[in-house]
Structure formats: C-alpha cells, structure tokens
Length: 178
Image (tube, rainbow, N blue to C red):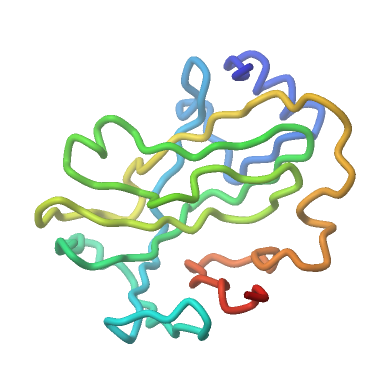
C-alpha cells in the first residue's frame, strides 16, 4: 500500500519519515518531490570492473546548467536528506524528467527501511539535455511494510551506503564476496 499525502505528513509528525529540507509545496497526492543537488560525478575509467573499486571524479553543476551526454553514466545526488524508519521508500523519476529523456536510476529505486541519507542517482539520457541544480528530479513514494523488521538498514554491519554525504556515492559492489 502506498502512503497518501496526509499519511506521509502523519509519519513525518511521528518521526518515522524525515525529509530535510522539507518544503510543503513539494508534497504530491501520494509522493514527495526531490531535487537535484549541486554535485555530479563520472567514473574515471570507461570500462568498469565489478570486483574493483571504480573511482569517480566529482564536479559541481554550474549555475547556468550542465549538458548531459548520451552513453555516459552520471552519478547525481538529491538535495534532500531522508530517513525512513517504518516504511519502504521508492525513488521514481518525475514524468517531466522522463519526457526530457532523462533516467534517474538504472536499477536502484528502492530503499530499505532504515535508510538514512541523500539518494545517489544513476543518471543517463537519450539525447543531450541541459540540467540544473535544484531542478525537480524525482519523487519519493512510501510503502507500508508487512511484518516485523529484524535489522534496519542503518544498523546492518555490512551496509555499504550508511555514511552521510552530500555527494554521489560510487558503486560499492567490490565490497561483496563473489
């Protein structure tokens, strides 16, 4: 079950959902709009290796925008820091973003209960498109959880994305054993 706007607000009041900064005008009927932060990153190497730590280079989106190019993976970040202590958060693109040919995540749209951080975006585009820091980039949707949770994400010893950041975070696949 997806939480409605009134229910999201109730959960914010209870402290089970935190959105910083929170802006009332960003609340949708059953979602909350998030915005593109000022940092982007690209991988240093064109060929990535799942067993190795692939390094990234950060850069700030200029005030007059940045043109995304097809066939390049950009890591972005939301302006908003969120905490979700009792629901499953999903980050989806906005239809206006999609209609510009921008995908904001390749596979990682679902967060875990206990996720406390900004959201790293896996941005790609169909054709060159200029983007701007602070532009609406996606929307958070919250789902009800059925059953008790044994270990929240922010309490897991093997959680790879717990360190609070304002910059995108590269893949930590290399920390897995395979």
